[in-house]
Length: 128
Image (cartoon, rainbow, N blue to C red):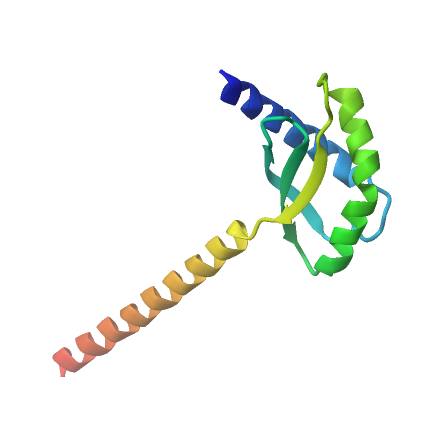
């Protein structure tokens, strides 16, 4: 039962942060498209690890600084919108799974294109 509650809290935090992060006025945070891909909260609700996917040209170091700077405001806004005894401290991590998935897809496409070329050359050779 505790895991269901924790999952629900993670989803609520993710939903709220998805609305709040675009409202952060810090230009370091607004330099690319930031998407929250997941949230993992500790069982004691003291910390929440927020996974971010970032699209576009971004200075990741500056983005982290901007998010760290906006952390207290985000936490305060979360506290007012969620009914929790403790509002967790936010820790931001980059989620590279989308980038890795795109890279794997590109590699598979390249391999498939190479195989198709080899098959076409074999067919030409057999036709001669």
